[in-house]
Length: 117
Length: 113
Image (cartoon, rainbow over the protein chains, first blue to last red):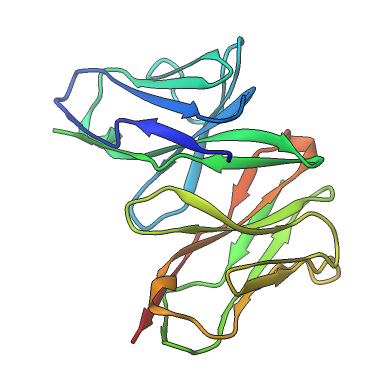
């Protein structure tokens, strides 16, 4: 149980184009999803918290107009990287929060490798 | 604010060696503590967790004890295998931050046959 998928797993796009990444909770409903960015050999940096039916909350320093987040349903959140540039190349990981057993846990997707050429 | 500090890596061990990865934390409330593992090119998998002081989390031969007095959650395994080679992240979740995770910097573990 508690499986989170991401699509695509890898994407290569040209500079100036936009890319959409999907995050789905497959067997549970997730009112909250998180988006992280991970640079090579570094830790995860939280970009934003996505709540179903409301606007995402972005961490300080993250451009909300560049990284558009939509959480349209209890099982789907999307991250759109608009007007992508090579410096946006990174590993993007989503997680979905599951409430069970009295505690909140986050379950992570497998990640999406974005390369902007 | 909350923070997590892990021992710096990389850590290189021979198969069947004993593993310790240190993790200490700073939190304002009563956090839950986690160890996540990331295999090359993949997302994170929850390895184990502890939700209150003196709890011991364990899974796949790994274990960690929530030590409130030393604000630590060190990861241990008695006999590592080559398949344990991965990046290990210590993390905390503070109830006051609505489930947001704060991660340590990660420790790369390489196990040689």
